[in-house]
Length: 156
Image 1 (cartoon, rainbow, N blue to C red):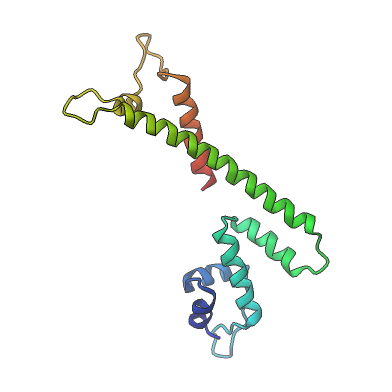
Image 2 (image 1 turned 135 degrees about the vertical axis):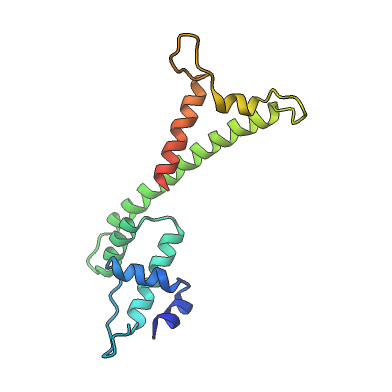
């Protein structure tokens, strides 16, 4: 199969397949003319990687899972450990997103949405500077929310 055929069959864009080849996740043999020749082995690997990525596994985790998949002497405990760590990370991210959602929901509820200039949403975003000149947040939850946003962005 050529890259177009395998792309269609595994559901990954050709660009992603080339990237996976560049980083060594798949290594299709080349024909004499230099074109890639994908077989069922590469197709199965690509489908495996597509599914793993759709579940949110990182490239590094995919590399480890693919290695375990190909190792017939593997221990299922190794696979489970990777999946469990990933699940814990997802659960933390969900908790952080729920906290952000609750905060934003409260701000939207408090905003009148009328022609008045005073807006609790903008006030929360602006966070005043105290009279002493040192920056302080209006409350501890804002600091916590900011930290959670940073953590969420670093997970992505």
